[in-house]
Image 1 (tube, one colour):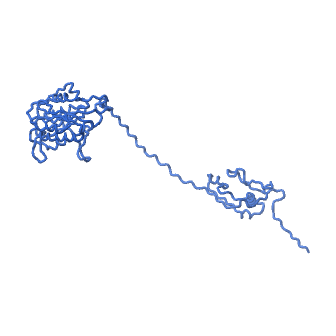
Image 2 (cartoon, rainbow, N blue to C red; image 1 turned 90 degrees about the vertical axis):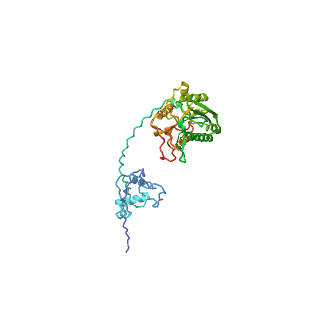
Length: 391
């Protein structure tokens, strides 16, 4: 008895029937259809080496571009080799397994999810833009002539002319000294003039000083000197007199004849070689002040290099006659430029007021501010600037 072994062939495709191959659609990462390659024999589904090299590090993974750029909702694709192999040969599962073997890739389980886009907050509401304040109008520019009257703030030498009034009011024992005793204005004024001259000489030894005494007429007593001792030697041998009137024009004419003001081509930019300043200590309460300036005197008063400072000693509230206010107003009207300093001191007050006024006059006339802008307080808000009295 002969035993014949019969093998049941596996079911497969019929002869001449091509195996179904599931082609992958063309994408940007697979433009030519990587699944649709031919084997080395030139026919579809040819025998290939099941072990193929893995993709290099950094190479694009199939489907990467589509999965990262797709706007469709997240989908999950699962390909199981077991499921595909469980069906009979010739079924779509077997065809998919054959196609995977032909392409050299092994069946894997791939889950592709689209990264959810972060929710963007709504744009903030536009903040209310505050209205633009109106531009203030530009103040008008003063005429150029006003600028030409102001010389540069240079520390040039000064020619200081001390004009001391010798009327009888200077001999009244009214001022209160430091020790509480009463003294006269002439004695205090002489001491203050000496301190002023010596201090100015310490500041700049080029300064020169002259002395003029005023009775009914003005007398040039001491010429210009840079030695304070020469002026002080003539300062204390003086006596007061009874004076009926005061001629201001006569005083200014005496000064004009003894000085010569500098002449500069450009007043605004070129500093002068010197300036002239007249310092008048005046103490007449009553009586008419005569003043009818000539053309020469008016020209001297308008010069940018001439200054007339005044310290007016008056009786203040004790004087029933207000004629001193009219005289003080006349001195104020002499300075049309606003560059001169004027102070009024009451003879019934303390002598320290006269000391303070003489100290304020130490500043250079070209370097000091306008009198209504000057502040002498050491601490901010200590004391307001001295205001001019109502005249």
